[in-house]
Length: 306
Image (cartoon, rainbow, N blue to C red; front, side):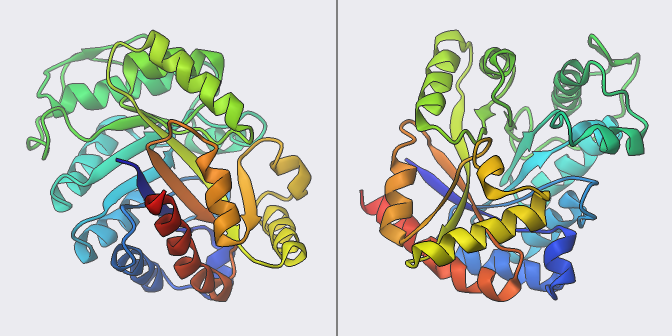
């Protein structure tokens, strides 16, 4: 079964535009009422966000069905043992509805964030893999941990997770090395390639190398707009505001699409094999975002109908 989720913006641009933190919780409730399967929040120090795990805790209290997720968490910016407890707490508060997508940072953008946290940029991928392995050790009741970067002769004892082994952890990455690591170490894959053929090739590579079940997901930025010129203009505004870069550059790196509901659905169908679509609305304007939400639900209904 294919699932569809909404990425809810928690960064400074939408807060500056007038969205309040309690209203973000209302958006999560609305997404659940519209029939979406999951709700997700990002994680960065670059755009003054609300804390991802605190926000998910609030979502957990006001929703009852949807999966709650990070898209994607940067674990290196946090104390890994404390984060294991925070994630466990959200998982228990949501009665086992948490999924944790993680990343090692994006070269050219994430280095300042690592500097803020006092964490070396070098060996960031090995550090990420160790953190995830450490979380799983803690969630499984291990008393010690020894990885390639992290070493703990003793570990604290926390409550048992809602599911044996803890919440699923996905890797948000697309490098050749990441494809190999997904199949060995992670429960899911969350890339955003602009070319569906690249997605298909990556998924085939993961399946060829995998030693464990992997959920293939896709992070897609969407704008449902019947007027093609207006849609492209809004995408341009979003990329400039969110990344400080033109849309043509951003769209060469990540999947973005604008068009009618049918056109957006058609584009998403090209990503054969994806089992969970994370849909990010391309606007930091609260009014536009609210107008887009039911239109995104329309796209989801078209995809479910085949």
